[in-house]
Length: 194
Image (cartoon, rainbow, N blue to C red; front, top):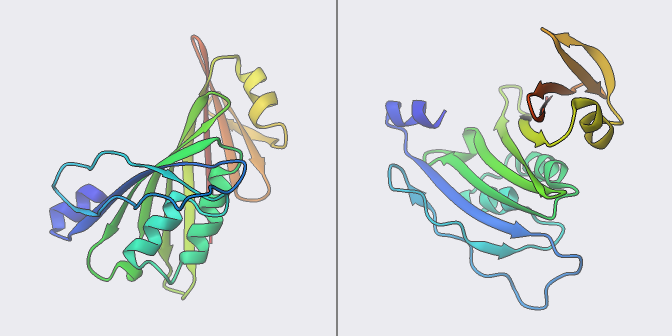
């Protein structure tokens, strides 16, 4: 969508931060967030930010951009995807024009058990007056897919195969596909929330 926005001449803004979620709240206030950049300027360096357990980088980015109509959806989704991570980093894109009427997209890298899980999450106001959101994530496991399933997806139930790859479901809208690799397993998760 960033490329489409650039092709259409719609200005977008990119924000980037790192957050470490401490076990206890920090004594000092967090450093200031990075300044927003207008495209096509190069992305700013990632800035370390100490967060409280209740605030995620995508939430900070949404607040900074004035993305208020679906702020609760940003909070719920970003809290869900960074849950259990030791730290997370984020790169957010949003329209410079009528930010609150367009999608907010964030690329999130959450560190879990020594390996990253990369999320592409979006939140957008819907025509019905609500908010639609979702994510897709990719994670590599240095083990067989059977072992990866025990580690990361014990609470998922087998749904079917997509091609020759086992796909599992959790609830009614969260899906997980495991793809065996020559060395390890690739996990792809997705969920759409209406």
